[in-house]
Image (cartoon, rainbow, N blue to C red):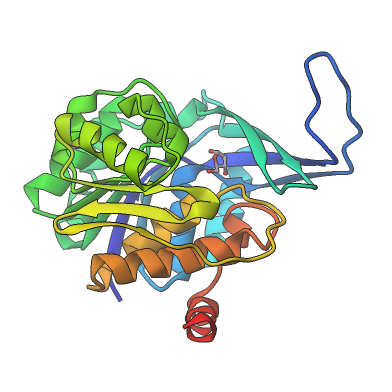
Length: 307
Ligand code: RIB
């Protein structure tokens, strides 16, 4: 079992299922509304945990009722809450998610709230966990100072650092040079590189732009088209597993959590990408984000079946 430190968001997902997305000014009848545990960081931590990694989650909740959704989730999952901080003055992060029942695609508006209050000191309080871990996993849904502190500690202890550049937001791009992998999806890749990614050639061009910004290795998730890996001698698209999707929300989180869990066990990059793709494929066959993450036995069985 490998060890993964995640500095990331907890967000309460408020998900509504709709027959189609409304246009501006239109009201559409939804048919199901669900509150559940989400947030890119917490989804990724849950994915890695269920995949078999020992996970340290560093996050911050507010003082409202939504914090309890996080606490219940971590208790049910038996995930360590030592570094789950609270700020009573703040709201817990929340997201409004629309899921199109026809296409399984989603639209998200996220309020990061308490996640933006994670301080450098709170990240440094977990220094021992950084020293003992195999992989550090980060995203763009927490405070810039928490991101910088996590990268500083990861580098201090010479750990593999994976930066999932989601969601798109203006960040200090010099950080791309201080991590081992950046993992945008195709939309984020276009935002940061200026290249619209539609195939292998454009994925290569986007990766080259990331490398001009200092990135060492680039992994671009391409949804139904698989994942493009540009790392050392590897320059290829790893094909996806085909499944019947019901909700694609959190698929990228499943992928990133799975990728880090696999790396933390010592799997090579391509094996880790295949493992991550299996995790993402299973997760989209279920509704929700964190609750949709598969357990290790399910991932191993899926991979054995599809081998
Ligand atoms: O990646 C999906 C996640 O993005 C959702 O769980 C939502 O909370 C947003 O952060």
